[in-house]
Image 1 (cartoon, helix red, strand yellow):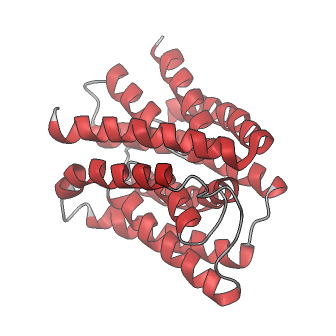
Image 2 (cartoon, rainbow, N blue to C red; image 1 turned 180 degrees about the vertical axis):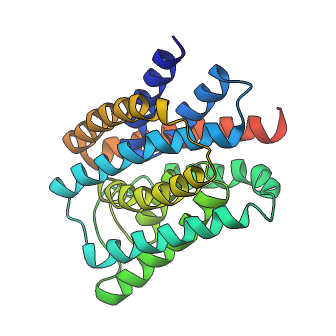
Length: 252
C-alpha cells in the first residue's frame, strides 16, 4: 500500500515538474508522511532517484520540439552539475536555516513580478547570443545548481523564472532549458546520496517509472498548449511553494 501511495505521488510530481518544476513539492511531503521514522536524507535520496528520470525524459521530449541553444545549455548543464556538488558539500558545513525563512519572501517577489508583467514570457526574444548567451546560461546553471544542492525547494521554478526574466526566453523555452540543467543537478545530488547510502533502490524503480509516466503526460500538455499555459501553471506552483515554504519556516 505504501508503495502505491508514493508511486501515485511520484506520477503527479513528474507531471507538474515536467511543465514548470516544483515536483518536489508533491513527492517529498508524501515520502515524509508515509515514512515518518525514516532518515530525512534517505527520503531526499529516494526523491532524487525518482525525479532524475522524469526530469531527464522531459528534457529529451522538449528538445525534440523546442529550439534548444545547445552551445549555451550544454555548458550550463555542466556548470549546474558542478554547482550542485559544491552546494551539497557546503550544506555539510553550513546549515541553510537563514534561507528557510527568506525563501517565502523571495518566491512572493517572483510571483508578484510575474503577475505585474502580464506579457512576461509570452514571446521568445532572447537577449543574448553566441558567447554572451553561453556565459549567461552558465551563470544561471552554476548559481542555481549550487542552490539546488545546498537547499533545493523551488529550484526548477527559479530556473524557469531566470531564463524568462534575464535571458528573454518564453515560458515554454525556459521550461525546456530548465529541465536540462535540472537533470544535471539531480544526477549530481543522486550520486552524493547514493555514495552515502541514502537511496532505497527497491523503491527507486517503481517511483522512477511513475515519475516518467507523469513527465511524459506533463510535457505533452505543455507542448500542446504553449507558453501561456506554462505561465499559468508557473503561477499556481509558485503560489503553492510560497504557502509550503512559509509554513515550514514560520509555523512548523
